[in-house]
Length: 317
Ligand code: UDP
Image (cartoon, rainbow, N blue to C red; front, top):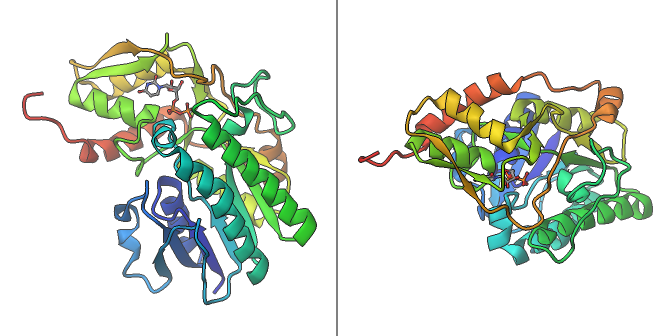
């Protein structure tokens, strides 16, 4: 049985990757310090002998007693609100944490796939964003702690690849959604669903004209799995190119949830909020034979089922 270490195992993406790797017949070692992750996301795995959980902060030395074949490095706060609240931890996990995890990959001779992000493109000046674009990032803005940590993650991963011959993969993940996103995570989809379900105003930032392209989590996991098993060591965008304005997205959520009290309200646009974002997935199509399969209407329906259970509605609502 092949063994895989998954950092950030109790998070949104990490927990879905745990499920997938177990389904594919791997032994999974999940690691998380539960800063933004939740044991609820992986508690169904605890009875399985194919699953072990280590409560650990990867910015500290990582000790894995057994052999490893693969590492999926997904530990990091990923919501703008989270990394605004935890700027130092965000920088540390992307830099010191990634260094430690690469050290584990080197000593175990394990293949490692690291989670990068569309944020490496910053507020992009080319559209859609292809992998050769170097980005437009403000290093000292509020998002800089995440963007630069992930840019460092890519740099140190390539350095370990070229200098130490570590077998590396880099995925650049665009906006992803689905069950197990945290209700209070602050990202647009949990915010809009919880507000619509509670019958509150949906907080559209700015004039709602900024765009994002949302990928359903199962599609993303499929792309990551294919990249892990591929031979390609340059960064690959994985995301859904179906782009929508945030204003139109709010209307879609309102229509789906069907709460007559839900409506749009406007709030100031956060500093450095990217105005446009859409992945160019030419590489993922050609190299991985991958493209997203779940349309937004279907993905949102599945995600609504989850949020219906998770969102607490106040008595007087
Ligand atoms: N956004 C919004 N209302 C919210 C949360 C986010 O209008 O309550 C907007 C935000 O300004 C951004 C987009 O939705 O333009 C996506 O934000 P998110 O925090 O999900 O992630 P990002 O793609 O910016 O990293």
